[in-house]
Length: 395
Image (cartoon, rainbow, N blue to C red; front, side):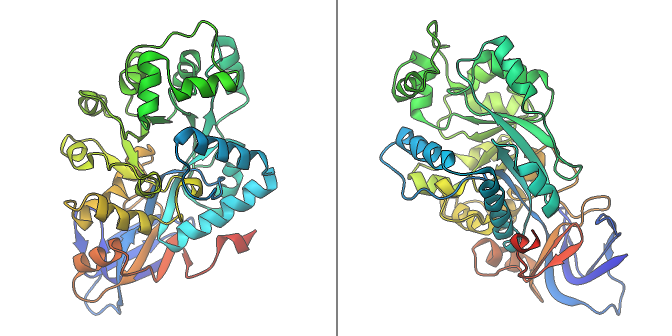
């Protein structure tokens, strides 16, 4: 058994000041309590490990944002085509190391090559690893055949899921096949005005892209409704469906999402990269929608750091207080990934947490961390302490 006695420990419902944590050799918390009088304390505030609810760890930077999204897709596809599987694994390890340094211990990874599950398991990261699928041209049999090649693999700490990419890149039969798996899903939805245009009218730059890629069926007819209503029609608007971005929701969509119990993840760094208008996160939270935070990929972000995402979130949504933002990056992230053992410090959960310097006021320390003024002095991943050590060096 290992222990940590700290000046303050945040347990979701409040603070243990002072607090005492104990965990077993498997990295599971077996004790979360107030420290007895006379215990020697470390002058830190201990916070739950951050949850990056949406990431593409395999992708590298592609430079500045081009004039339009379709051009960006082209740059990403070209860069991905030049990258070997060993290079993908190396990139994932490096990105995990960067996330860990900022206090992140869990990730919602979107894997499109089958390389991430093994890297995540060896790194002992928690979260969920979604296998991404695309195929706007696929009928029922081909959709089922594709899914047989993308089996959800993972570990207890980081189980699998399925990620039908987006309504403009996944056919209705492929969505149905994904839904039939009855596992957590992640879908990029209502991200673009062009996406909504395509679904309503069948026209625009996304239609042109699909035609260029020979992925537009000859008998294609637009569904005639927006992305959220389309997912609802397909039976995919579910509590286990993580909705990514939601930049371009239509009237009534937020109410539909709230009624369905579906979570949303927003990526502040990506909003900045593309120069997008921040979506109304405050309204979504008031409606009871669990809104989480993610980094997205280096292809649309200047770095992979959940602390950077929190700092950017303070600028995009200044009315949200730091403790609310911390909840978005912890508890809400766990809910978004349908994972009960992360996002909170409690008995039975993984011993995933980090420490920031603090003596007197832990709420003020959290505010400093969220705004980027304080950095973690140590991070514990399944009970193992990391202080500046890179996962990439572990092989």
